[in-house]
Length: 357
Image (cartoon, rainbow, N blue to C red; front, side, top):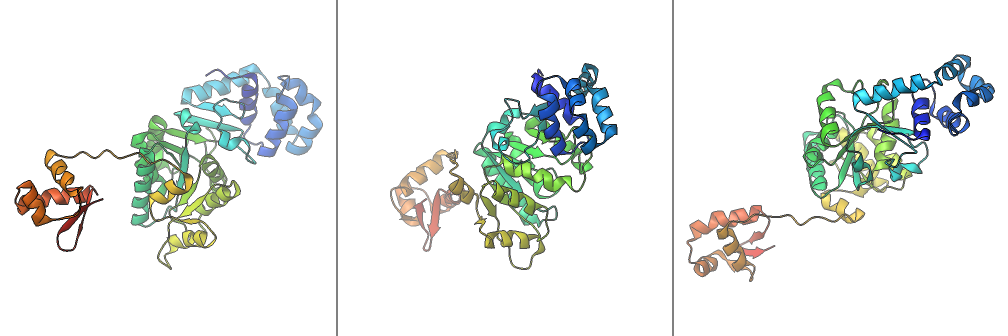
C-alpha cells in the first residue's frame, strides 16, 4: 500500500496509544502537516509538555524517525491491515464532516463497501431468539438488494446480521478494539470470515485491547456509516441505544421493532418509538423510508405451475372451474396451487376460490 506524506504522518501519530483524540488532532495540525516533524515537535514543546507530559514529549521526539515509521507500516502489512486516513481517497464521505470522526480506519477486506449504500442493524446481546432470527432475515433481504449492512461483532443480533449478509459480501463489522485481540474471543473466526468476504474495521491500532468504554464510542462509527439504523432489541440501559442517539444526532432515520409490553429486551425499542423512531414491523418499512429500490425476485416455476398461474391471472376462479379449464383432476391441482401460494403468486379465499397476487 502506497501512502501520501500526510497519510504517513497521521499513521505515525496515531501509533502513540497514550494520546487522546483531541491531542492527536492538535498535534497533526502543528507538527505533521508540513512534513518537518522533529522541527515542529521542538517548536511546540511548551504545549506538548503542558498537555501530555514531558515523558510523552520525549517519546514523540525520539520516534520522529523513518525507522520507527517503517516498523509501524511493516506491522500493519504483516497483519493484512490497510490504514484509511482522513486524507485517503477511500475515507468514507459519510464520516468526513462528523464531529470526532475517526482519524484512521484500520481495515481488512473489501474497502469499496465504504462507498456503497449502507444500513445499520444493532441489538442487545441478550435478545429473544425471535429477535435474533428477525435480524438475520432483515439483513439477508437488504443485502440481497445490494445494501451493505453495518453492525458490531458481539453475540446475538450482531452475529445474526453478519450471518444474514455475509454470503452476499455486503457486511461491514466495526470492532471496539484493535485487530490483535477480537472481543468476544469466540467470535474471532466470524471476524476473520467478515474480513475475507466483507469488511472488518476499527479506529484503533491493532494492539489496542477492547475496553467497556470503547463500545459506545465505537457505535458512532456504525451510525455514521449508515443511511439509517434499525434497533432490533434494547433494554432501557442497553449500549445499543447509543447507536440510536448518534444516528439521531447525524440526522439518520432511526427504526425500531415494537415489543410486547414488559419484555426487558424490548423496553428500549418501545421507548424509541414513543420518541419518534419509525415503527418497523417489516423490511419494506426500511425500503420505503430510505427510498431503496427492491430488486424483482426471480421465481422459478415448473411448466405445470406456469399453466395454472396463467389461467388464474385471467380472473379469480373456483378450483372446480380451474380443473375443467385445465382438464386436470382437483387432487392433482391441489399441490400445484399450494406451491403457488407458498411462492406468494396466488391467494386462496373462502370456498376454494383462487386469485393472482
